[in-house]
Length: 182
Image (tube, rainbow, N blue to C red):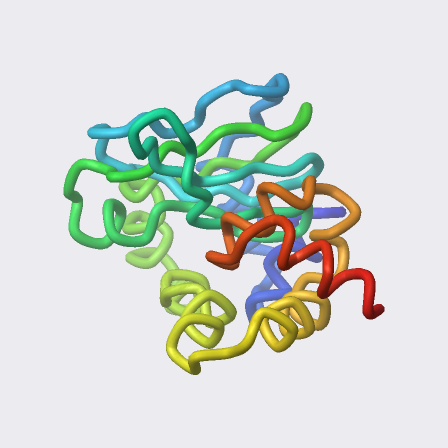
């Protein structure tokens, strides 16, 4: 996917905008289990996932609670930490080998000062709608799974049931029963 295609998924950007974006971003290759954001670290970048997958989690006692799951073609960051410039309560880790494009907050501000079109990134910087929908609407386990199948159809192909169940805040056994109905 070209830089212009990535930007066009957000809005309308000129060739100048695309060139400017390329100059201030960097590509990184990460191995499985590489950590892109540590707990208590302030999130200072947003990432476009060129390939691979990531998960955000919190350590609770001896288990990991999945906060979000990220797939190729998505923008990823820790919203609370980035927007508030506060220490992250989550860890962001590569689930598989991955390549990302990193845009630092500092460079985002630079881009916004050079071209108004970069204000369209506001679409990305709003909290994830799917997560809000799932938990603000008291959905049943079946409705939660149905929603993520529509919002992120590849999720079930990439992540194991245990991780998806943790993300949906349901027991893995419940998710297995729901999946059996499909």
